[in-house]
Length: 446
Image (tube, rainbow, N blue to C red):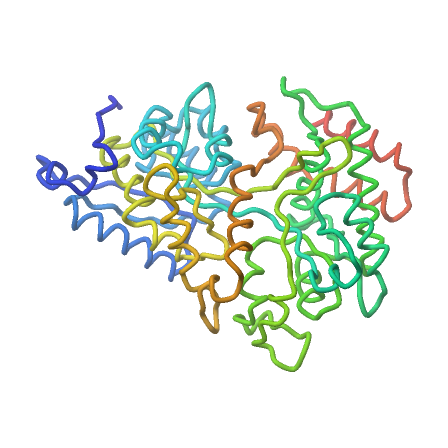
């Protein structure tokens, strides 16, 4: 479609938009398909229509089906105007020609690149353009018992060495496990931990040219460290469920988890109660918990953070001008509703209305979280904790992002080769050297 000039962000609700020659109707496919989230998105669409006269049809598409359906629609020349998608889809969609990178770049330029966290923008960069507009994200957290760390004179777990020292001091099963690591190989959770730890160690399985990384030194650091945290965990096939239960029950000194744990630590979810005392609504555990977003492994002193980001892509078949204006509206006038769909898992990737402004971060901290009871995160955690958690998005990373090899890295993630081989290694079935060699060989065979 011929690219049309969209209005600037500051004019989004101006008379020029209200007086457009003809009201348009566009469609957005969204992965946020839960009924309450659909209602929030409809509120945004209604506000946009009231301001502009344009109608946005919100269509729910299950996350696991988004790539298949988008590919089929593209082949038929029938893509929606806007695609809500994950970071894994960025480059595959862009390289296939599904996304209008020029339109997305113009949206970011209009809103101000300095109003966004750098990490999500870097992830979306390809050949000098932003291929899709980030809306929200989260950074994986090293969650730890700050009260126990302080009592033992331990440093916060900001490095492999810090974590190993804390395990040595605090591991006392079954009353207290030094760590609860994932060991169930068919769960996505285990690959999330592996990728996070690999980033911290400066290891990626894919090279800048798309070939498999055959340098096993950093890889062996990852494997050795994973065995350390697995050895400090209970026996069995462990995934997110056990790590959450043991931490909420006061039986784990450290876990790695997504920020969806934030409301549960505050006693706001009956299906995941705090059980360290007789009060499942207690905020005591939240007050005794610390969070680390960036931690470092050997040879990578800067460390890394693992981030998951969601985007709105303006498609090749879009009514470009209207789709661009709606995307701008989502991260401005409609941003409160968007983030309120799940504030504990939707950190604001846009900080404020202009460079240095943090109005959207403040708005996010004021939004209610929880399921059975609701409170703003600002009521549960100190401002510094909130600031530190959100700051992780600015440096959030994934395998292959910096080198434009996210698509190749995603194939390696989905194959779960590292999960399978690491499980054999921690179970003592193969040696460290053999484990590293097998991972490289199997990645090359993909």
